Image 1 (cartoon, one colour):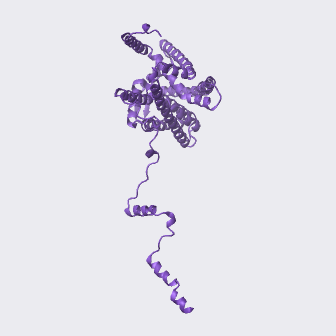
Image 2 (cartoon, rainbow, N blue to C red):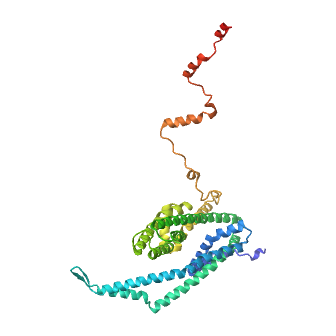
Image 3 (tube, helix red, strand yellow):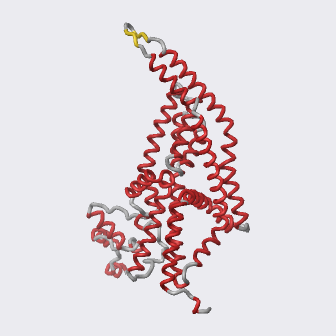
Length: 424
């Protein structure tokens, strides 16, 4: 290589600063696109273990495994809702028609004076307001309909971008990862690879915690709907467990489905109308989902990435307020990853080795938590007796000397040598 054509140190610094500023400007300008690409990367991360399992346990190539897992997931994501849409559409039409009939009856009732005993109430204004509200919901303005159509079209386009990006990340991630490592100088490449493995362990631990949370939520809601006598309790419980992966939106969809089934079918044993059964379902769901959000999820997520449960709850709430669903979904592994990276930078700045240990015990519970020590007896006599039994070998218990009383009783039975001589 011709050293005369190399950039000077000052020029390299300038180009590095310019590149960093351009990267920050691009992130700010394309933040909506980056947000959707992050969603695609997270979805690819969720289904990547299935691709790795197929490539390691079978002779399939990565492209074949990616296609199999990707299109199977796509069928489950799009095909099943598309198949069930006509059924739910007919049921939704019936529910909407019943609500409209109820609203019309209530408006007609309020349009006339209501007499209760000797009192007469004039509620005609309430009836007119109810009719106006109903008309506002059923006859949207043209500009509102156009805005709704535009929003829906943009959402469909972003959805298609996410689908294509998921397949791209799944199929090209090994090459993208190697390409990123190639930008690191050779003396520091091993450290970056180890840092990548440690951050990857953070996300794998988070994924295991999410799976545990989904299983617990699914089992609890299945048992709850069985107790309440809701038809399709198993399906509703499984959906509640799956939808718990998406904060806020997922529980809302699961609650709507459960309340809709209760409103249409009622309960198998509760002697109340379907409306009140649906109300009971909503109340029970809100109680259980809040217990999950404020107690179960922080505990499971905190223990999976070794973070304080109260800190996990605080960061989830802050991320929900600031960034919505995606913030609440990604904030825990992102903060745990930043802690790992900050620990590496701190040790490098202080001149210490880049990592404190080899990483084999990262996100592994310590032995004292897996097998806690047994509780000791309070009585000193029991403790001393147990120590004496442990001190004496098992084989010597039968050969131990007997008490003096027993030796006295056994002495007459021994033969006397004088008597034997006299007999002779």
